Length: 294
Image (cartoon, rainbow, N blue to C red; front, side, top):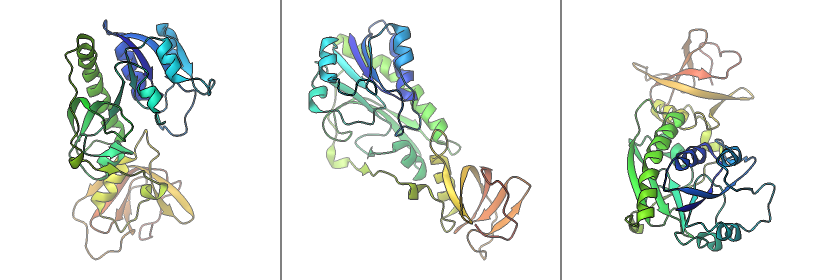
């Protein structure tokens, strides 16, 4: 089965590597980029494509190229598109007989839309999903090819959840390729009545407000851990990154949010709207004094 592969993130790289080892998969074309400010986990696929001997298009160097024409020229049976921050036009969606297979790290039809890993952690969800689907002109609304539930543990952050999803997707894509090759894989329609769509997050969504509960702040920090840009708090005129936290038991109810309760020379405990939190990994150049306010 001839595959045209589109992507430019770490996840894309991992799945292209997996496909390269499958006897049913022939990589007929790779489409990627040289850089992307939109993807914190950017990873060009060009070196991997070259090492595989696969034709490669870098859209940064060839911005006017017709992807649908190149997919047709490669005689691709199907297109895989993972980690690509561009809407594919109808002409590309129809360029291969098998259409375009997309991926969304959520349990579709729930939680379509933007930043699914971040939202799942920030909202404190106990599970998310790993879903492959046939792309249409909607947002994550196409027919589902394969789906798996992925547990979110209390100690997961964006980095560990990303790795869990990547490992699950690598397992899934093997059976997807087998099913597409022998014609046994049947897609199922999504129930649009059960769908919701997560909105795009802004920089303000990553700011810590100490009036939030300790649990909410802890989840926000987990959600924005590497490879994402980190949660932030204000300290004087500065914005300070917070990378890892822990909930603190036995906090007092009569203290104001944002008060620094104690520190040990590196880690510090801060009162929240409900409970207290320990900042384990942060970018304070100088620790705030005990009794001061963030």
